[in-house]
Image (cartoon, rainbow, N blue to C red; front, side):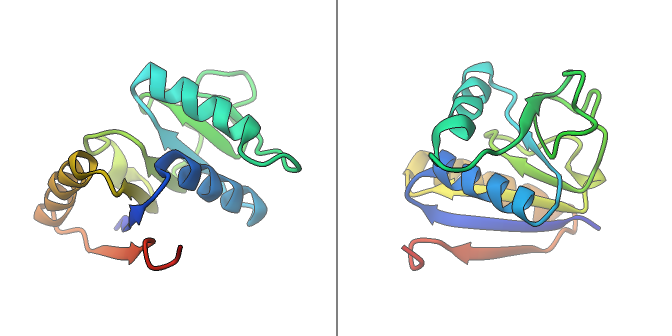
Length: 141
């Protein structure tokens, strides 16, 4: 069953998502980043190039010819995914295909609207029998 973990109280949602992607690469893991909104996907793509000056986070968009060899894939659907190891959800809704993955990660900012949408997602996961663990990142800052 998919392990669902929520990082909440995050001051910079996309910056934290970049750090999660970098950590996955550093640990030799692969990660699908679900960003169905094109503008969000574009922003996240750019941030992966710029969030740390001295490191590179290898990533491509789903559908790219190197998708099978690249550890971080930004996807807007489940089409053409070459692994089901870990999924990072940046969408407002649960990814319809999340249960195919070993791990699902959610990042929740301190913004009340984002928190409300996250509560809806968590209710959804729990209503389907998934255990959800939480980590307060506001205390880690």
